[in-house]
Length: 88
Image (tube, rainbow, N blue to C red; front, side, top):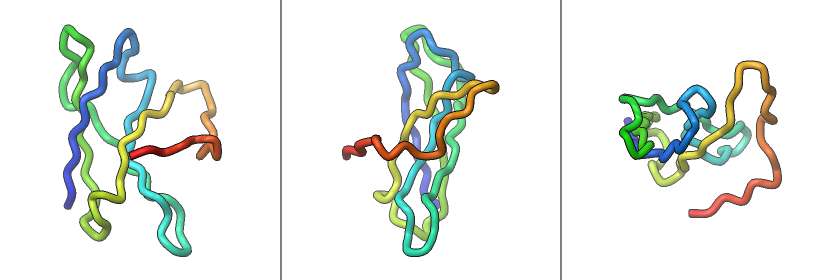
């Protein structure tokens, strides 16, 4: 398994207003790999909140990028927007 930890500065957002995911481009003949990350403690007074995630070691850890996706129970967010420019 590969384990990931990211620290998100949430500002005025609460953790239920977005999701943090690990994303990897599709392999031949499949869809992208998307794994949810979980907050493992509350944000500190500065608004930093840590998130943890794990994925199978069947792919390189370098294949994955953490991303933040807006979330609201009543909103539909497109599956993948073609306008996103990924940068490492």
